[in-house]
Image: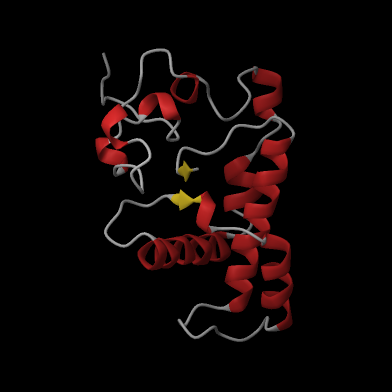
Length: 149
């Protein structure tokens, strides 16, 4: 029996049988979580105190780059509206590929705005974070809760 109290990253166990293989998964708010789902049970960040203390996310990232973080968040929203209209925010990983090539293209046009009004440097930062996230996942890290494969 499934519940919808929390959500996973869209693993096959948590997508209801009748929706599997039929296009996009249901919106996050309607996502079911199968009992024992590893996507649901495991945290993204390390759980031991010593390691967590070495991750000053607010002081070492948000406090350093608040405007850049806000710009990248806005870029995520715009991309979600473009690629997933009408759906809750999520990173459609199958629609987001070739990060290195796209980083290079945005780097060439850094300092200017793309046709949608978003800075190329913002899109470069988004792509750089996506590339790093993928590399860390390839080394055993867990995807974020907004990832959809």
